[in-house]
Length: 514
Image 1 (cartoon, rainbow, N blue to C red):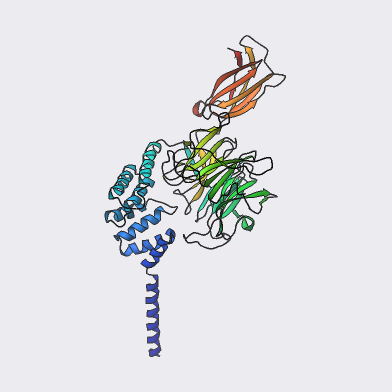
Image 2 (image 1 turned 180 degrees about the vertical axis):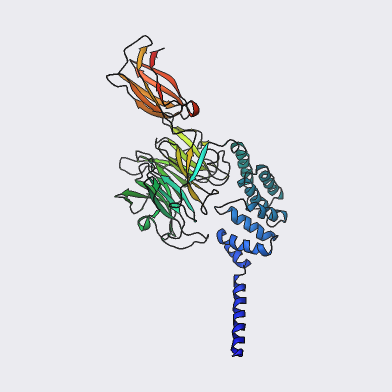
């Protein structure tokens, strides 16, 4: 009896020893994950290795890089990379240390690290380090002057511990589509980078809240990668980036009917070239398509192209929209606003404060030109990549994806409120007279209102045919009112006050002759 007990004790001890050995972190596993760009799993193993060897230069370097190359909190990368750089762990150590400082808004230290990397004169990023320094300089100008916005995580019905990103909404904010890499994707398989494959999800508003996410299933999704890369203003056309073994970088469309998105269809060769296409947007009238493509003849990297629908229903030969918008760097995710003239897009060029920033440009139909792109500002844009933004019709709210302190895991979707626009609106009532002495209002008149800041036409109005009274509702801002009557055209400036001096109602008459 004692003999069998001794054998049992020995076997149990061996089992415990083998289990302990199996649980020890294996540097070879970490190295394999790292080489295959599976930074999620690599970081897990390197952190375990660092518990035993906290000062190991290589482990610190790779742990720091793994943090920077996953969509998560970047703060802890600094300590790892400082140790790596001090010990010359890798020729790229100072480059990644510069990125870590930049992501954490430590601009002077970022510049020093990038300059040190240049001085060492060896590494794979010597060609882009000067551009990184430019981005640091841009950030130093824009970050101290943040735009007035607030962020709200849209909650657990939409966001998960996995990446949720690229949100697009309808103009009335009743439906949202986005991309996610979570366990319930169609393929249910993890890819080489440690994440699940990407599928497209949707949600609608029920009782004032976003309903639980729904996977669009096999009519749209497959065992390969699908990503939402655009949505028409009416929510009837969903643009999809699809990547499988045979097709890398093509754009598809799925039409919404009878409550669901239908089987995705590939765009024609006019859109999908032998190059690489990644995103698309369509005008409200459905006749103009803009998309991002890397193809011969561009200005460098991915550019934004435009095409218009022919009488046959086919798309015309695309044209590059030019170097006012496109740069030697990548442009992506064009997204037309509901006015059909304002376009938001992502770019690594212009005055980006780091990686991709979101910019705004406006089309002028009279001159056939795009306005100089405007960086929409920090903290919507950050030193990390900021790719998409989707606005409500009043432009007061927008949806983006990013990592913030209250994220559930990796990238989450947030609703952004642009506080300076305000929810307040002023009702302006008035009449038009030929001059200040006249007592008979003009009833046959045409009025158009333009926002002086954006140069966009807000609306067109006509007086009541009997009373001559007109009503215009405007948000706080500066406007120009153009009046056409009695063969005359005059303009008048109107200021609508906001914040503490806001007034909900104004009576203001206008005279053709002052």
